[in-house]
Length: 477
Image (cartoon, rainbow, N blue to C red):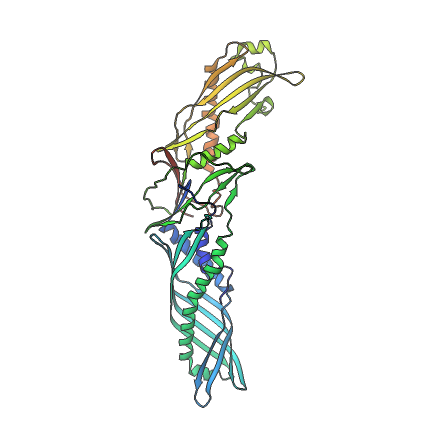
């Protein structure tokens, strides 16, 4: 039996199948597409890793017997086999439509050294040997599926191997006698190795890879409030050019997971496969996050003057607000204010081609801070995000506006138009630039912490009737 800390299937499938967990559902909130170009890159990288891992493999002993003239039948044993060098010159990881993956290695070479023993009745001899295995070809078909738990399932549907040539060089006492029959030994060595290769691969998938996949977590923590369920929604879908892996993509409350009252939209992705990897995120992920954070009160806020930057010319006091409410400075001279904001309902995000829009409404109530920790309400505002698109261009948020409405004033006339203009000016010149800087900087995807994308493209597309998806096209890893 060959054992290794990094077997062939686990090395190649680790990148593709460690994204999985959870319960099945109707539509995914997140789709990861790996194209044939991406698989080619994975095959190249994993071939180097496999080549280094092979040096740690423990090879099985090899037994047999030969007939030697005047000696009769002689039993021999090759043991303590070690891989001295390994050159995996060609590999390919291809897609099998409606099945999974095809992995192959061709024109490869392995050199093995070890010891031999010969036994003939009371005669016992030993020595060392060197084996060169040339022209190794391996072909494996892997079926990809999903368990009811949402974790991935992989099985070997077919396996074949071929060795073009085996050269055995034997040294030691009477080693020259065994060399006389090296053709028999080499032929048997080849047959045994060819049969063992697929046996080893199938056993490693069944006893190592699949049990490992069943231990994968079903969720990941985002913060103290929310987690991400990225369970498989079904078997990965393979075509001739791409492999689509579909995940639940639901943000849930870590304290009290509640059922979501709406379904994820159907994402009909375009048949595009010119880049290595694609990520498609529907508004389902964002809107489930909105529910969680709204229910936790995370979207509510309180603002006092001490959180205003010290160098700001506008303070949160009655003197600064007299431009909006003239009477407030006379009624409460040089008095600090406190603003309490509450989001009325969870904001809903919608995608459309090249744009995103949201419907959000909050109420802001202002209090004057009187002596003895007394708070006296002075006015109440309604702030609504207009059904206006925020255009996405080259990973930048271009434009979005809000509308302010006075709900109640206990201090007389309120210049709502001036406050609305000031807030929109702040959004345009301060808030959006900071958001755009963050978008340009990027942020880690929880599923791909160890993969770095280059030359990414951000697009927003309409999907099936009423909703949309955000796509990130990765130029490479």
